[in-house]
Length: 110
Image 1 (spheres, rainbow, N blue to C red):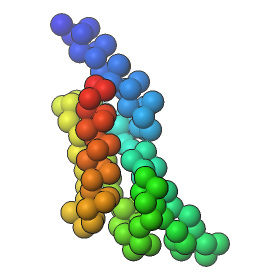
Image 2: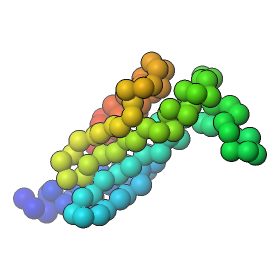
Image 3: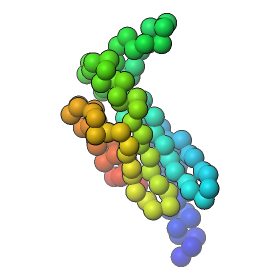
Image 4: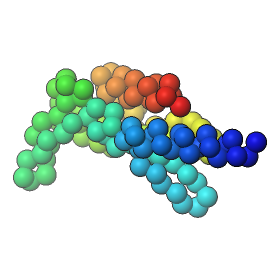
């Protein structure tokens, strides 16, 4: 039984990495984190570092919405097999929908 769990976890890690995940391990915790580009946010910057333009899956969004999106964290806990998000409560519908669709797509692949 233990080998099945390990193989399942390894398979999950491979699927998640193929979809933009980055493995993080510390203090006995194992998580896969996803940056904003994995779920469809594209941001361009001025030389000053300010946001000049942003879009989610090809749809233009405001710079302030993009800034809120950059603060969002999405991760998959390899120990309990669940997805978590942080900071999504401040987002508007388009960004929340994109994140939900991304998570649902990953869940279907696992």
